Image (cartoon, rainbow, N blue to C red; front, side, top):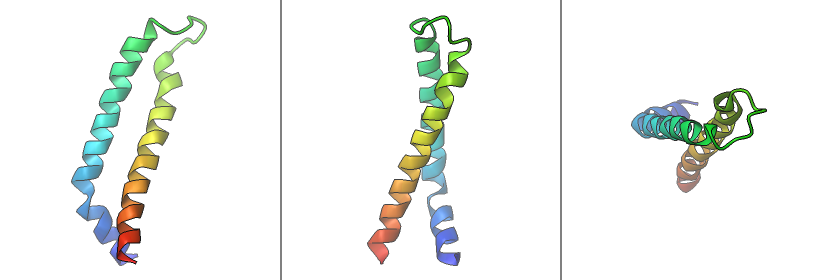
Length: 72
């Protein structure tokens, strides 16, 4: 557990960068796609945001898992 916390804090700036890049993608895509999507979807931002969030979590987990696997 202690090793995992050290790795987490070692990559905190990388994680912050990943989160900020994905938030920027989220807002840009939501603005662009709002006019392209079927009007039946009321708020496309609420429709689109879970997918971007899950993608960011998978990317972060993959990168950190690869670092841990390299040590084992």
